[in-house]
Image (cartoon, rainbow, N blue to C red; front, side, top):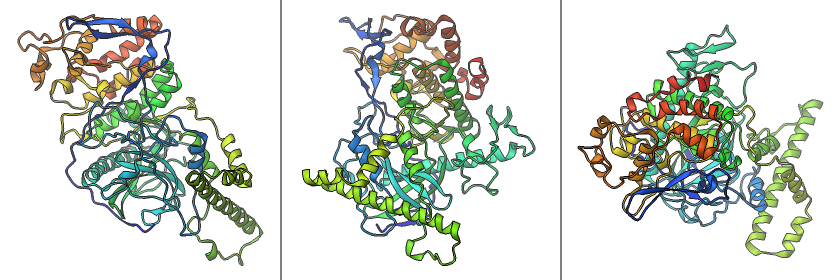
Amino acid sequence: MNTEESPLEVPPTPIESTGISRPTATASSSPLKPTITKESPSGSRITTQQSSGSSKKKHSSAGTSSISSSSSSSNTHSDAFIAQQLMKRIKEKKGGVKVVQKKASTTSTSSSSSQQPKDNDYSDTENEPKSEYKKGGYHPVAIGDRLGNDRYIVVHKLGWGYFSTVWLCYDLVEKIFRAVKIQKSQKDFSDAAMDEIKLLDHVMKKFSELYSHYNNQQEHVVTLGEEATACNIVEDEATNSNCVNNQYLSQRTSVDYSKLRVVGMFDHFLVRGVNGTHVSMVFEVVGHNLLKLIEQYEYKGMPLSLVKIIMRDVLEGLDLLHSHCKIIHTDIKPENILIVKPANKIQHIMDHYQVPDFDVPLEERDVSTLNKKQLKKLKQKLKHENRLQELHELEEKIEKIEKEGSANACDDTVNDPTTKQLKILLENAPPDHIDVENIRVKIADFGNSVFSDKKVTDDIQTRQYRSPEVILGARYFSAADMWSAACLAFELATGQYLFDPQSGRTYNRDEDHLALMIELLGPFPHELLSRGSKTTKFFNASKGEMLNIKKFKPTSLKQKLTDQYGMEEEEATQFSQFLLPMLEMMPERRATAKQMLQHPFIKE
């Protein structure tokens, strides 16, 4: 496929972006019975009981976790679909590579456009809409394509979002797999991608500067210090293959990016194709998002010991963003926190198909000067390349079967030796299960993020993680992320939303959201109400009373944890004491990420 790449220049001004919520789905019951609120005939809110599993959520698409190494955007897939994905291998010989087939589907949502809808459901589907391969839309990609001045070879499709497709690629320079996100070419999408690049460039440079400044080469343990960050950086004994130094380093061995609690962006370029010019970003390959882990625990919550580990990483990432980069993420939620270790099936691909000498065509190799050891190594390479060629041919067979529905072709394929080899490969692939031992996470998706001094929209945060100042239309800053972090921690521990507002006959979703906050945390401070441009829509300005909701059923956070989620008294006390500083109504009183890293819940 003929494409042209060129360096891209980042524009100085960011584009407006908004948050988006994810849907809920009905699930099987659980012995835990959280209280929810419903509207009574009089318009007041009354409480009923429902099973704690009744607010299970769909797995987000690749659009919300665009560099995740999940094998597709759907929650579950058939073996045939997984087989198809595994078949998409590199073809050494140029030409004859088919464009990856796209199936029509409903549009998924992402979170980096001012035009995107808010609080709407979206569909998780196996493939992006074929209709979006048009001018201003997706760039057609084929397995074996080379991107970024031929530096990156496309190996496998990782997923897609409404604004982009994401591909597992092999970096010929660093000899490592990367995730390349190719944005749609429409101007709004390109502008949003350029803004994200500007933010991530700043994050990468700032972390590099901090690490280099505070790194003491003579000591094994390197502490960035209280004035820098609460994070302790421990140098590895050996180089981590997933931590490749990038374009910002003057000394290529000075920074270990495994310590960065934000998903690293290591390159960016433009791709010019039949549908326009596409902004493309190169990320480290990471794993599932935290919603997948919540699902793995069946929406019943995970051990607090695991919550501590995850929240420490999240807070370290937020401390870097807030204290040093002056960036507000604006969309902290499980879908945007990614596990460092790649998904098992993707790791299996990378392990099994480490192809050497991508950049040296077979016909150009001179074997006359090789010794016995080198010849043996070359023979292994040729055998590997033959396997890739066979897999590519098998992929074409599968496409033919799907297209023609030929029973005979199917029989032929089943008896094919390569098919049997692939079947063995699939059977030997580890199950799609997240190993929580030594788990580390990173913050991802900066499509909505803003510099603290350059906020361009007041419409931020996904519904269930939205802070009170944002709902009221008051000024927000980095404290909004801390509110979301508390909601995230609660969801990890219980499997359920802390706030899941619903509209009623006489009140809307915003009003119910504010009422839920009052029930849990007490009345809103008059000072905060006085700042909100939307306050008069919800409250009586003089008395501070809600206009359409009159009856409340107050409860404490600790009581909610013990009564509704069965948490032990001691654990509930400790955990509620951790959450409450991040749930202060007044943003100025809300704890910072640096402060929360010193909290006993994290330090112990």
